[in-house]
Length: 150
Image (cartoon, rainbow, N blue to C red; front, side, top):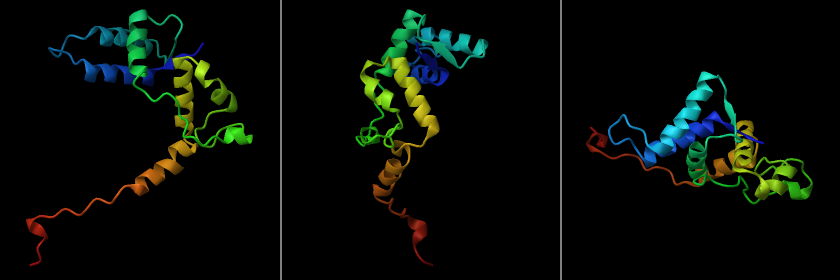
């Protein structure tokens, strides 16, 4: 089984902080409380991953609610594994990960996302990100009273 990384727990906590903020600045909602307990135990035990098996039910439900808000697949519709590459140049997943993606658990998918993000080699993270930035129109210069010549 797959493990859930502490950064995903943090992301889920931040999701719930925004979605259901504390009414009084002290009280935590049930989702936050469940995730905070898992997070605290991870920190206490110096662990950066927790197995999805045995994950407390309330924390799992809160994590899954966050997970449902994330992008499911890293695919950018340029799959070099179909051309024989062991690792897709477009998304960074292995041939097996591409083939078995629909059957993977949410934790397995997040492990894959973390790995390809940390490797930062796939076109998803560089070539197309650069092109998207280049395609944005330039920001016009600010105008104001101090821009008049003396």
